[in-house]
Length: 224
Image (cartoon, rainbow, N blue to C red; front, side, top):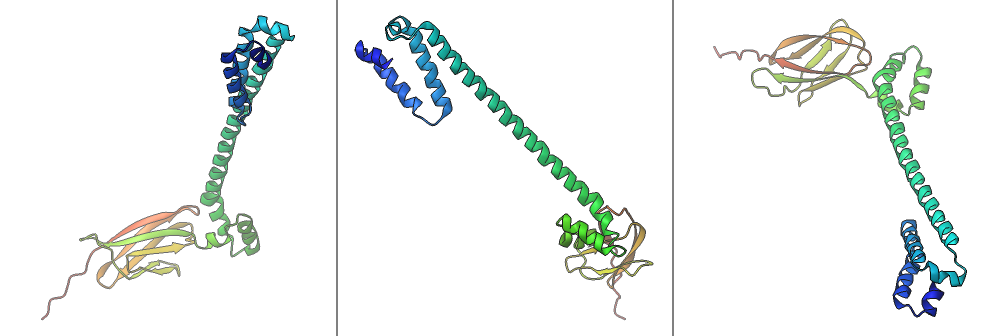
């Protein structure tokens, strides 16, 4: 094509071919493929003239088929990449779902065997890389407020009747229990300025409970 442009002093064709050459030198395969299509269209336009340079209509058609094959391969490659992205997302979702299931179900169940089979429990959580996390896992968290004002109640004690479980109420009104046992229990909430409250809770071994406790203020004694 360049020889044809030079031999015929075809300035328009020469400019077009220079642009095609520039595009073919690019790294982008999309740009290079677009340039190849432009070159094919020019070849079709100058088929009769190119015959003098041993470029036949059959060779131009073969060239077009080569370009089409590359375009099809690129399209198939794009489909594969898109499918890989979808499969990667499905796999990541599966991992998250599995990890969530283990945290909500199996991790807590295994933890309940720590006293009887500490080695097995430690081996499990080492494999899960959760050895430190599970020991800090909160089973029950509570928030204690003044029933009349809704303000947090600072300090006090929350105990579990018929057990040795006991925890303190923080200055901001929170309390929590770690590794709380499965079953039905009664919480006893005490503060010297409020009426003692008892609350029944039922907890499964893999369940997290959040409790709000409202306490009635004790009457303020009047001076004699």
